[in-house]
Length: 556
Picture 1: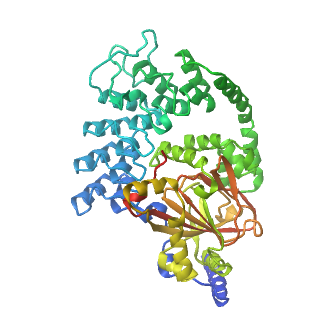
Picture 2: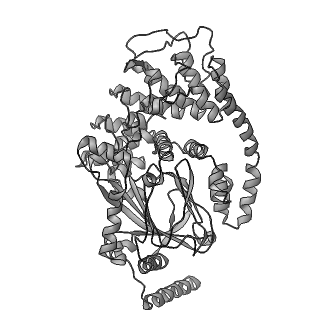
Picture 3: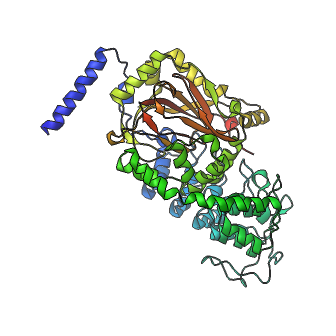
């Protein structure tokens, strides 16, 4: 106890010394925000209770004055969240409380899209009349989402629910039935046909004309593909808008079992597909090196938790972030697929995120990331660094789920540190970002996209992971509509490593920044931070949510 008291006293003395040197401190409100989590900035008590699976708490809130259709800044209702989490009890409760089963979030996803990984949730929503022919802003239908997760039972429920009449069209008489335990016998199940814009639902075109079969092929879900072909009558020869078949997609993604399945069902290999198959075979050799790379991660001297994290990292991610491979030598399309495939089932709609990342990959820098030099002065950056050092606390990073050192900041606290003029500049940055997706929606609705600050924090990075420092940030997609990230240190002068990487312009791009430079991007940009090998990196991160109906995201 005496030792702990002495340590606390020394910490106070160091803080007092820094105060005497003129450190600028945030207010009490910010100092109490150390348990900050991004979701707390936008989630209501109802969302929090749903996220925690607290059925009695949800019921109590609904009996009170809380609206069941209350939405967060990204238009996510409690029903969206319950469906994505696969909680049938809460879905039933929210539906009985008149939850809107056709509410659309900022991506246009209905609860049926969000719950596509969970068959029981799908069954409950369909029983309430949820529409299977409602597309999100990418153009994807709930069947595309179910194919993304490879849930055969969910796909069967979606296909059967929209039957106007049974039909045996497209069922091969000599095909083996899927081996999935949830698949019914061949004699009991006939393909059910509903037409969307003249196309059977099973072949309905989603984003860029992709079919549910192409989505299953992308993810390598063999049983899902077999169900769609053998039971639902999917067309194996269907092409998307750029002329790619499901076989082409599977070969490009290196899904060898899926390729064999499609070839068995008479998909036609083109010369381009054959070339892709050779490339996929060659990439298998790279996977052999994964164990060696994992062992090399142990030599970096990180804490046990971070060492284990690096060992478990996906190959392309580990090479880029931990070992500093040349970003230009990495296939950006494969990196996106690697990340999207690895996302855990949960609240993030990984199909929507994958679509957005692919869309952002084709954007030039001016439309992918707005860069604003000298958004903060050296003095303002120094004041923020001091605030983090003095008042920052250990918390858990929302991306890597490991300890980090950051400081949650309210609007008043941030303005107190950097001043009203700099604060006004930072708040204006999302509105200066030229986003073709938002501009198109705004033009259609005669509105101007507006954003409101959802929360801000300053963070410290270093390789001192034994002292609860964060050395890197894995590739991820922000949940906020817009992000403003300000470098509080110079990437080229103050540190070694700690580079911000973004996936746009057809490649993985390093974003080298000077002290005080701001980078603005949307939730579609996949990004990460490489390992800090020397020095200490500081960043100010501000999340903005959509504040008007015209600020919805569209990647189609």
